[in-house]
Length: 508
Image (tube, rainbow, N blue to C red; front, side):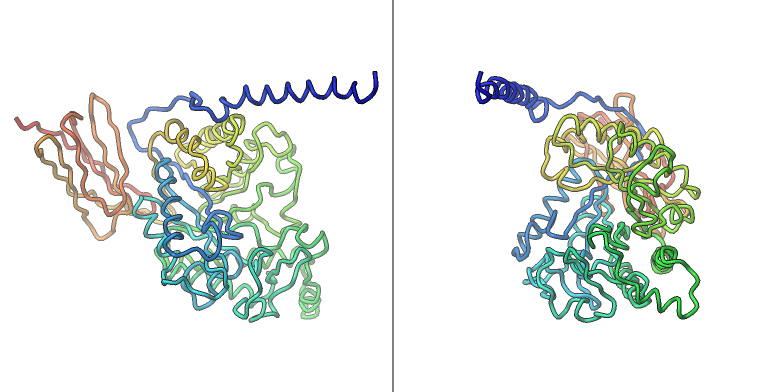
């Protein structure tokens, strides 16, 4: 038989079989039936951080492209937040400083290219995107964490370098990498001072719930084609001034000082603002013993274990983007190891590679990771999805979350090291109106509530709903047959007021 005929006889049937298998699997992946994971019934409020990253660099998530009309930018933001809230999530981590620029009004850095298509150009008609996102998030009962990149000066998809760019305004602080990006020198005192000033300015002026920064202190080696980061002149100057640290330790020391000082400064300005860090998921190979992979300690000069050990953060979000059964980078092995290093019991809310939920296998993986995290961390559990497209562009998965693992709303776990004073319980009243039962409450005490937790009893079981801080009433149908209610105030650090149950007296 000629080779071509043999190839056709062997290869084509294999391709057809593969296609048939794919078509057979298709309803399992994308069909109308959702997996039957079940759901856990509960009568007291769940505690879990349920967040997603919203990336603005390269217009990954928002806005969908530079130069959109302001109304469309706002519509896109509202659509994203609506989908997050509808999935019973409770936070977004919104990137406000992707390349030494600003998606907010700043006197320190220029307006972002990713907004208008021109760095330094304010939105027209004018609005402040960060303020808008905060307002809209809080209206939906969501926390808003402002995400900054500490030292990236210009991205390859960040448009032309403008006169406003730090690359041109402070060239002594910036180096160019082989892949075309520009990077600030992490050891330069003025770099550290500038980035700290930017972050503290955000904390001072905006009603954010958290400051978040990721692993881009030193760039990944591939960004510079594996060549050393170009800071040899600075290191030589350090040595000439009597510096004794080796090159790696010198770089890590600068990053450590930034992390420590940032935490101190945020707490000085607004103690309730949570500080979160999302480093690479592996500290070093062989930690734990079976783990292999990239060495962030030596390649990114990030001693993430030290930051967690010392508590220079309020929540720690290692990017654990590997599957449970991937032996050398196993999700549960790494998460359990990080928890073992969590000496001060800060929040450990891992980052998940949730984009894999386009398939049933990927969905199973993410659900299993959520369940494992809950088993390990109890009522301090949480996770962050990379990225918001998991929810916004996958309605089937968003529905699955709402009907299974996120069936119950959840409060963000409390941070008692930030505040130990519980808020006062509100004054609660109720009255029957026509065919409904109206519940209303008024805050008491000096501390404003961040959320309201309404418990109600029906058919012998307690249920609850969480409301945004501006909501002060709720109406039930008389058909709900409410037997008792309680309203609990929740402050910004997640602490709850006393719960006082009120039996409902029927009016005939």
